[in-house]
Amino acid sequence: MPPRYREGMRRHPWIPALIDLVLIVAFAGIGMSSHEESVNAATLLTVAWPFVVGGAIGWLVCLAWKNPAAPLRTGIPVWILAAGGGMALRVATGGGFAVPFLIVTLIVLAVFLVGWRAIAALVTRIRARRAA
Image (cartoon, rainbow, N blue to C red; front, side):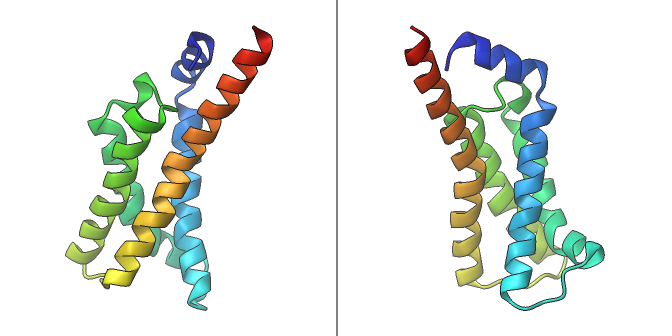
């Protein structure tokens, strides 16, 4: 990624953090609605919090604020900890577990948390080539 893009994201790491938060909560909401569960703030919080905490731990572990939009350096650790850590927290606090749910969680959160970063990196490269 061009240095200018990286510097902009470093100055405003709350933007990628907010994107991650919205996508993790959206994952929970989509999952709930696909199972025809009632989606309201309380039930959404109950389902989403373990994955939000896992994602926050991912941010801390990989020091995401240093390069928050990097697909590999940041996106993969945030994804693994949001999905794996979130699932572990869910089970530890009495939530259900099923292998198909784990697989869907891994796939959807990979697409969401690594995907937006990969798209941002691609767009940035394309813009840099056009500007050159």
